[in-house]
Amino acid sequence: MASNTLTITDNRTGTQYEVPVTDDTIRAIDLRKIKVQDDDFGMMTYDPAFMNTAACRSQITFIDGDKGILRYRGYPIDQLAEHASFLEVAHLLNEGELPNQQQLDVWKEDIRYHTYVHTNISKFLAGFRYDAHPMGMLLGTVGAMSTFYPDAKDVHDPANRYVQRVRLMAKLPTLAAFCFRHSRGLPFEFPRNDLDYVANFVNMTFSIGGKHEPNPVLQRALEILLILHADHEQNCSTSAVRAVGSSGVDPYSAVSAGIAALYGPLHGGANEAVLRMLDEIGTKANIPAFIEKVKQGEGRLMGFGHRVYKSYDPRAKLIKETADKVFEQTGLNPKLEIALELERIALEDDYFVSRKLYPNVDFYSGLIYKAMGYPTDYFTVLFAIGRLPGWLAQWEEMITDKEQKIARPRQVYTGHAERAYVPMKNR
Ligand code: CMC
Image 1 (cartoon, helix red, strand yellow):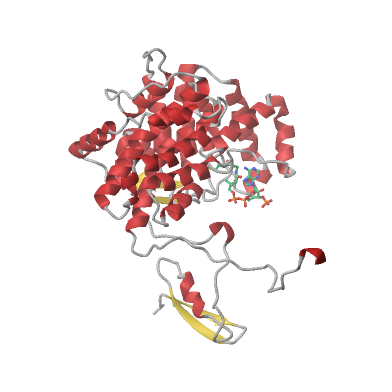
Image 2: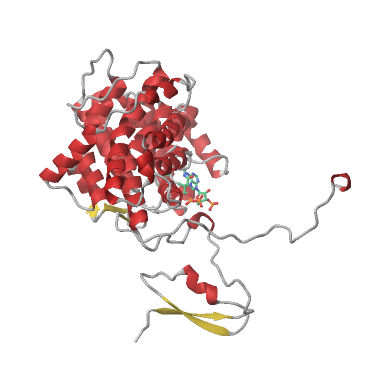
């Protein structure tokens, strides 16, 4: 009978070790018994960028990168994008199940109740320069929220954690909209609690003089994009939320770390980078030269490639369908033509095919946001609003996981051995 263990022979000593295998995984700590001398520290694994290390057990999101599968709590992403609202999905991620009508009503009402932010927040937003990047403003203001809710420090009380999760869900769109208005020099538009979550956000960004004519197709498209971004298991920003949250800090500080991670061009900032790249390319005629540059290693094709998906990103497929509906309303964007041609060439080119580089979630999302009227540097803020339920669900799971401790990786030290201090005159 096969046993669920792994036998390791250390050829340095000839010693054999047996370590248990659970879920196709061994515990790195089990390797510590592998030593040459008794007083050795013991063996570690070396895994820069966590390419092959599971840092938690999670019940939230399942991805099969080779098959292009993404499921939240077991539900396929395409079914959720077709049928669910963003708040239903947020409930699913955070509470573990799709809500029944009564649970959904309570969840919506709890969030609606907390949409306003302290008026002092508008004062310190006013301190940002007119051209401050909205992600910089957002991560600063979300971090600052912890000073308004010192009760959030009690991260071991489940009821208190629920209140803070609800507050963050309720207030992030308000803060995000305030950042948008600040960039445009427009007065803040306050939350309207007669509107639903997405409509309220859209109203706070676009309303002029208290008036905004909603376009239901565009609002549903935005909602679908938020659903598609809602969680993606242990990506860079979620890992940041978990690692920072593992110190026991309040969730506003942990989420602001997630926003900082998302800001980067290799992560959420890629949607912004795609639009800048399409601008740089300019016309279809310039595409072959651009592709050649990428293949020579001068820059990357932004919106292509993924650490986990090595086939078409299932979200990209759904986003492309959404893009068609949006462009029917708004008219075609000339950049879309460049994007489509870029995709066509890249999917045939051996450089991209052999590296399994396919369009990811960010390739078309920026074009949709642009068509909706959001400026390029605002795209990642929209991603952050979408990703928040995932960050919160993962934070909750981390806090309640008895196996988790403060995140603290090891290192392989490669610096100098001990050496004596050198006086200034001898250097
Ligand atoms: N364009 C050109 N070449 C690429 C690209 C790209 N977009 N992505 C990867 N490669 C090449 C890379 O140069 C390397 O080639 P070689 O083996 O010859 O050195 C090979 O493909 C493997 O790349 P890698 O850097 O080891 O792959 P990774 O898993 O570390 O990177 C990634 C994943 C998403 C950071 C990367 O594909 C990338 O930089 N893409 C562009 C940025 C982007 O669109 N990011 C959004 C990701 S999806 C949303 C999100 O997570 O926020």
